[in-house]
Amino acid sequence: MSKTGRVLRIEKTSIHDGEGLRTVVFLKGCPLRCKWCSTPESQRMEIEKRYGKDMTVEEVVKEICKDEIFFFHSGGGVTISGGEVLMQADFAKEILISCMEQRIPTAIETSLYSSYDITD
Image (cartoon, rainbow, N blue to C red; front, top):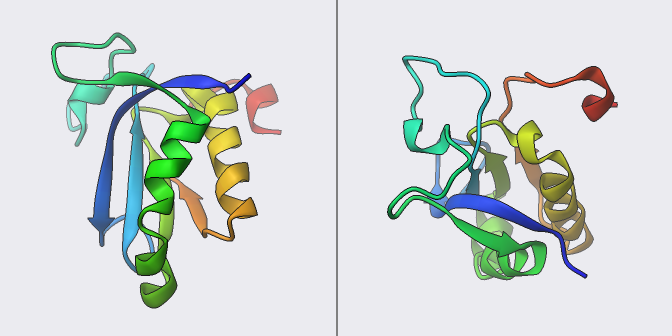
């Protein structure tokens, strides 16, 4: 059975979240409430109006794989962002493993605000 997580949105052809053209998967949920947050709609874990939906790992990776040709030619890949990625650490980990199996370069954006056992 596929792991399910809460995704804010999937952004295509980003040039600001790592090398080359990137697909950025924004996850919902962040324990911090930074006033300068660049994605405040990602802070709450709940689905709000048009912000967020539940997706399986397979659904997310299928969407990412649509951009493989851009990754190949630009040296890009996928970045998992948030919210705080570590609030959905198991979900993010499964996405990253699946992408690596597809030879898609990966990165995460995190504040590392979590318990130590999640990061080991």
